Image (cartoon, rainbow, N blue to C red; front, side, top):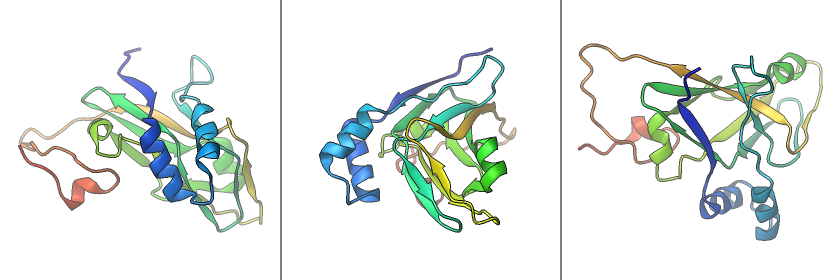
Length: 175
């Protein structure tokens, strides 16, 4: 297997800013405890393709509701690869748990974005059976798979990412 990436925690200052925005009711001490408990994504077995991203705290999502989760994780990815995020199979099967954007795409240049490359997950419980999803802190919620990608022969893009989510279609900085 080719080793093409490295998971890291985002800086404390970035995590604090993002978590405070997402969960304004949390105190700085609570957020610090969550930050210190973050587990880097890992594979469950040597044959697993997906790296499990772990819930930073207990997450409860009632049917039809959603949760925005700052993971505290960033990924340094070699050029020519992308990290794709999917719900963990069991959660999708049991609860119809899904990512709001269906598949999360983490580009290699996201690592250098002005938000520290902080990966967020927005999950929706689309249960048709009225089941509430309860994910305990430290258990897997989504899985990330690294895949190679290609570009066209006539590709001449030289723009650089500056922002986070959605920034490549909003505005980019040119060389």
